[in-house]
Length: 252
Ligand code: PEP
Image (tube, rainbow, N blue to C red):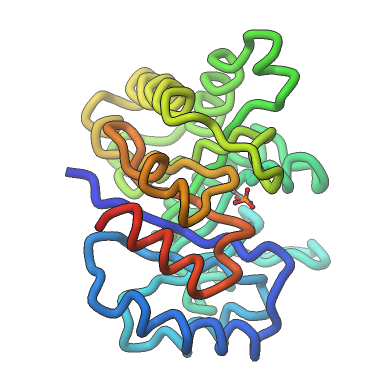
């Protein structure tokens, strides 16, 4: 049985004070809900405050990215030990905005994934096709390439914590969503590639999240199907009521 996981990607929103205010409103709304793992991914500057604010709750904190090296002359970067020291149990890797604007490549995704596993940080690896790639019928090959490249050199016996988020780029922040059928099909392709790259036991236990304009109204139909084990939520995770409703609607 794969436990659903729903993660909030706050992107470049919320100061530490705003993160704390969110958590204080949000916690009572999901207090009695234990069927889903919940992860908040604030901006780097709000991680410490958020981590303190979730003390004594079952909410986890994740970073939105990190470097793969432990230390070095890399101005502006944050290392896995630093992310861990801020209280992060999870990290997003390869979000499409990082791939699009910050030169994230399949190779750096692979380095970051291996670093996360080595530091016992749960990686949420984002993959997904662009609109033009879908139109050209390349969705399956893009997903296979991204998953295979992310998993190069990953030992199956270290890969158990792996989480993958399927985020069709055309659905992120656009209000467009994949249909449940499109998402299910993509998730099956991803799971088959995990089996090919690692093994079928890891593939069966890997949680694959859907991301792309998830809202309270579509959470029930998109978040938890046979091959969909939760969601990565951007815009609708910025409001505590809307994010709580997504969690409650997805696994009532
Ligand atoms: C995201 O940024 O990961 C995301 C899915 O954003 P949105 O929910 O706003 O589409």
